[in-house]
Length: 330
Ligand SMILES: Cc1cc2nc3c(=O)[nH]c(=O)nc-3n(C[C@H](O)[C@H](O)[C@H](O)COP(=O)(O)OP(=O)(O)OC[C@H]3O[C@@H](n4cnc5c(N)ncnc54)[C@H](O)[C@@H]3O)c2cc1C
Image 1: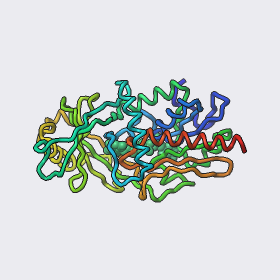
Image 2 (image 1 turned 60 degrees about the vertical axis):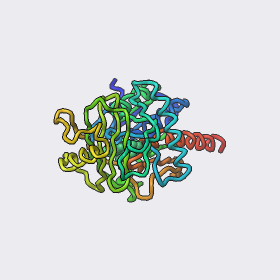
Image 3 (image 1 turned 30 degrees about the vertical axis):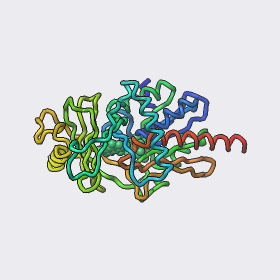
């Protein structure tokens, strides 16, 4: 039987244990499934888009994906990022994971543009989603996790389809805007369009915030770098905007002329378009009771879903354990 194409009408489960049901199979749903399975839980992931899919609204297929410390976050969120950093460093020991390390060091004057105050080259994990998401899928299936392709109208629909389950995780990203019984109007789409440049100069990551938001993210395992960035609110166009692509190449060239030529050869370039699932006020991570069921929500990670992923999975594991304990001793 196909490992992911279960009959979505009946959703018959091959095990008696009550599974934790995760809505969403992006990096948040998959990292969480991986973490739960490692701790002995049964897990079912229900999602419209699954690892390997290429829809532009499936953000996890298109990320850079750099780990870098986000600005303006709480100490708790910093800790969540630190956990992710630790997990990714370990994963980088396995080249199949798609995670690799690029250097960290403070750069000396003369190495960076004159109009910068200071700069660092630092050792940090970068994740290649084209390798990491399939890797996670394999790990999840290997540990007994089940993927079901299904577009849910509501959380209630999942409660009805999995009457034996009591813990549901909503990791549906932008889907939380339209799920009938969530309708989170803080969620919004933020379009990204990146250039992938084939090159053998893939050792240093550049990030420039402020006026000229620009990044160069190495993808050593795909022999190239990802050039960005742009954020376009509520634009869902799947078409390459050539002006954006040219502008990103020009900005990246100004930032690192030794890596990015001003006019790269056409055959060295391809385009990446994806929709970030963003949320005004920041991401949601909380627990709520809906009848007999506990819903743990984890969505709205905008441009940082990979940097938060394994820390969020760890937080959700603890929330699941706390919920289970409370239900068992009730
Ligand atoms: C161009 C670009 C560059 C980026 N660069 C970085 C980076 O450098 N570093 C970083 O940390 N992050 C980066 N990101 C952000 C990162 O990709 C996202 O934050 C992350 O992928 C969000 O993961 P997610 O699992 O929450 O959502 P998604 O990956 O969007 O997954 C959502 C899942 O929920 C499912 N779903 C939704 N609604 C329903 C429904 N009703 N029924 C069934 N299934 C449903 C979907 O099918 C999907 O499986 C980038 C994003 C883009 C687009």
